[in-house]
Image (cartoon, rainbow, N blue to C red; front, side, top):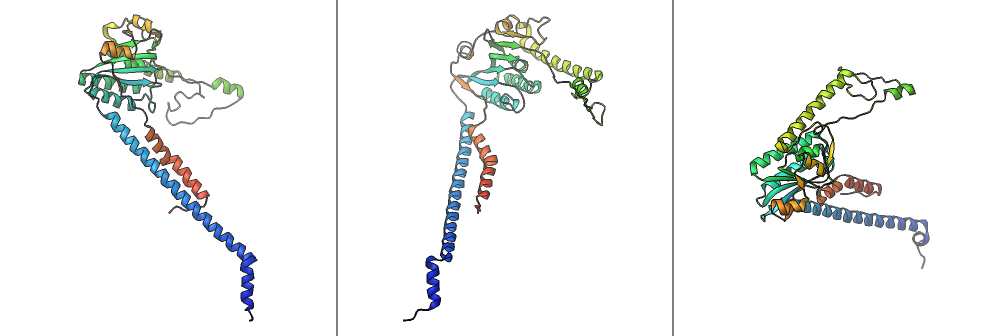
Length: 323
């Protein structure tokens, strides 16, 4: 029987020709693309599950931390590190923690656990004002317990406490205000660099480090610093009252050891957190109300922003289409 020559050609091509190789490559490429697409879908589903779990954890943790503790205890709010907007020891973080501590019926007193070199007088002022308001509203005692350092803006806050306890080697005080910077005019002259600055407003270039210091502007800044210093002094005098042994060095910016601070009337006694809770507040159980960035929130931010963007970029580069 004669076979169709066309069929014979197709048969030979399909068995060993380049057409077969091309078809196999296309099929394999399609399979790999489908497998990659499935893997990416599974990956992003897992990613969203992790994100959802992080958000649930964040909400649960927030609810747990805000739940009142009925048993008698000593409430603690930490003020650690630099005091400033966006910092851990910012008014945004400290004030809500103080409110939670004062509002808890089980809190017998509130302890400010301080280890800070200072920072923003604005943030310290906000915290001090709210501290005084809460004390008057809830009629609860406030004690400051100093670890290593309680200086400048940190002491501004501590002055609002009823009593201040320190370690004998703590660093306390630095009741002063500063504004620092640099001047490069002499160096510029040596290097032959000319400063070209155009402003609209006679004082727009105030404190410009590349221009000679203007005496009138310097005097203006000094008056402003003196005013803030006077506000600081008023807060300390109001908080310490007759206990303060004021002398020429009290408000000069000097820092004292813990024992010296007691002698100067800037602190009331030696003691750590456990001592104050046990012997002063008479409530040994300690509950920390400090607000810290929630791990779940931090994870959610990462997944919702940079990580998510990076994953989509990787998917695009891999040629995967997300539908």
